[in-house]
Image (cartoon, rainbow, N blue to C red; front, side, top):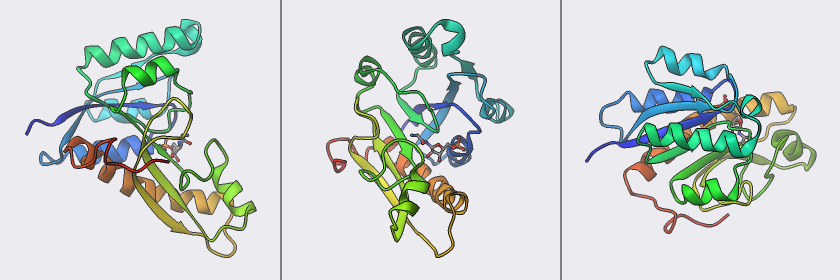
Length: 199
Ligand code: GAR
């Protein structure tokens, strides 16, 4: 079966992007990374370029805002023949129109066990609540932020003495395992938005 053509959107260092690129190096992996795009000159773009993957910046600020930024993203995504989009630390809230255009073809990784802790500062909030476990979730994107059918979750135990930083580090390791697995499930058709569970 042909590999799914996957675009990755980032805003920062791109360690999840790197995990996806590494997984896709295996010819047996059901997805290939066709472009990496960012909403600003993100550090991770250099990593993608070094891997020989085309990169693009849809600079929201320089273009004058969300509508122009998303229009440029769509142009880049279409030009690359994108079939599936992975958000990997993309820190802009996407418009309902954008989410609708890519309905069921847009997935995200979030550093908490959704539906717990949507939004930011997830690690500090889990610690403040006295939780015993934390983790990460890969899900199909819906217009409401950090909601949508769940593809995979990985649980990470919270240890005595954990700080937001030590916990974030352990959750990030889990993210790097979980995202390539989740993308493989979607790209191979083993999981669809209809078969995934709601969050
Ligand atoms: C990751 O922890 C990702 O889950 C989180 O940002 C980090 C990006 O790191 N995403 C969100 O919080 C989205 N709501 P990375 O650039 O090294 O992949």
